[in-house]
Structures are given as structure tokens and as C-alpha cells.
Length: 150
Image 1 (cartoon, one colour):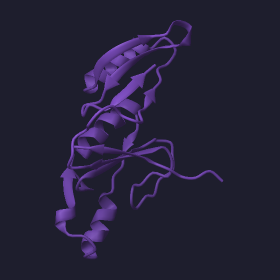
Image 2: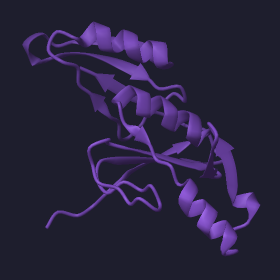
Image 3: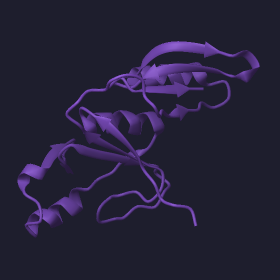
Image 4: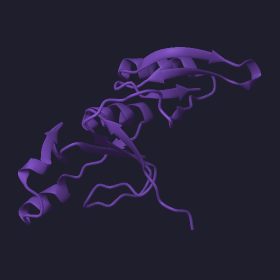
């Protein structure tokens, strides 16, 4: 049986970066508000562990996105499939990513996808054209994390 996994991305503003990547990948931002309410009422967490983003309670410093077709836990909102978790860290990004996402366009849709990602807040860095081996753009998300669009 295959193992479950999630990709964790360090961030300066987890909710904002989750919003960007949810829009970029057409994923859903997870909603942990039901779980948070249960934990608050039971006294398992205090108000300092919680903040609000887009009208929902979230865990301070964390936000996650999941593929809309994958299963998830209805109480916690946590996805059980393709999932990215963003967590705030005190230090800024230093150097090139050692791991990055490749986002694939529909055939013939590269420029349209790159333009859509720019409207969401991404930045073009460099176009790479390897002829028959491939053509893609290196881009940065709003926090400067590199990713490729092919």
C-alpha cells in the first residue's frame, strides 16, 4: 500500500500563500473552523492559537490546500490526498529551492496559464526553450519560491 504524504512549504504568510496556490492549482483551501471550535470549547487550545482569515477561523501560522476531488475529513477539513500545507517560519527564504512544483498547462495553453498565474501574483523569471526536449517558464510565487510552468 502506498504511503500518504503532504508537501509542507515554509512561508511568511501561510494563509495568503495558500490562497495563491489554491487559485493557481484550482485546489480548495481547507477549512479547519469546525475542529477549531471543538478544541476551543473543550479548552484544548486558547485564542492565541487561532486567527481569522476570509471570515473563517484558522490555526495561526498554518493553512493548507487540497485537490477538490480527493477525500477529506469533514470535521478537521484535512485532505487525505493531494495536499500542500503552508507553515509560517521566522526566517525568510534563502537561496534557490531544493524542491519545486511543475505546473502543466493544457496543450497549447502555456502562455495563457503563465498570464493567469501573473494575474494571481506570480512573477516570470526566465523562459527556457530546449526545443524538442521542452519549453517552460521559471516563475516565482508571491513569496519568491521558484516553480516551473510547462
